[in-house]
Image (tube, rainbow, N blue to C red; front, side, top):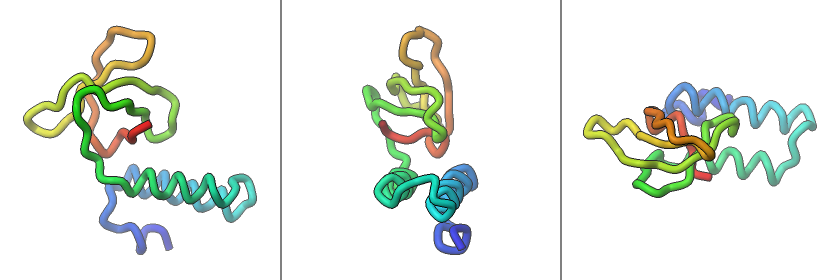
Length: 94
């Protein structure tokens, strides 16, 4: 059902969205948290330098350093000085 409703989202975001909905249905996630996750994943993936971001699973957070000409996002994880490059759909604002 999620794939049909959110077919215009990138595959990685649809997968995370389906997981949040499934956790809600299974009773593991409360309604408010599920709605928050769905809204967050449906946000447009547009970032600017300085934005706080995290990976879709929330395992790593950091700040956007710059946006490359091809749209990829250069960001630095918290507590580190390494620069990572991601597609915008692989990150969400935190």
